Image (tube, rainbow, N blue to C red; front, side, top):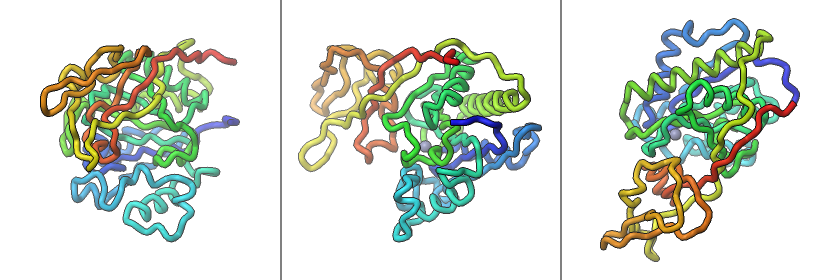
Length: 298
Ligand SMILES: [Zn+2]
């Protein structure tokens, strides 16, 4: 895409109503807007799902962060609470083909041990160079590309081609961990400073390449014919997000004590292992491949 400058940036928290890190950070930024003010662009802050936040639930009727496909946004018959919220948010930040904001930061947390994960909104080189910068200033930052990383994915971040989701964990739903909140805040400031520096004509240095984790597929738990769980995440895999999983490594432990093993030659790097919100999505983990991505293309 053609890049002119970043004129408006949106920070969203509480897209999921029980992920308190982003909710309390957005509330803090709304109380002290000078913290996120930068001279070269305008800031917008937004709490994505107020009713779910009040109820301390992920959502009221359905997952808001799956309501942003182009088709659903333009379907007037979809009127659940989250479908209405998605349309209202798209009216404020979007539409996708001509967004009113140039960059969206969507703040999330995970019960999986995601550490500090950035999920860029697109594989636009602008986004990926920013990711490279963030992983250079803090090697704990990991860059993960979703299975569907295109502009019609149903996530809120897809309202703008530039931007990212920040996913921190492991943290329980409805809980604050000061360390996660501070790390997320540090990342937000690093992103805003990076964007501001580009606008000022003094871009930050970016490494020539970075490690990315490319999602391959999501794996469900073993279930019986009624859909009931037959096994749990294996204790040796719990909290091992981003660690290599090799042929013969245990993945699940059945309730009768039998281990279920990974049986593929390809080494993969599971993420979102045992994410509480994903049981209903039939996702026990997402397998990724670890790749080097060149950033010095000119
Ligand atoms: Zn979330």
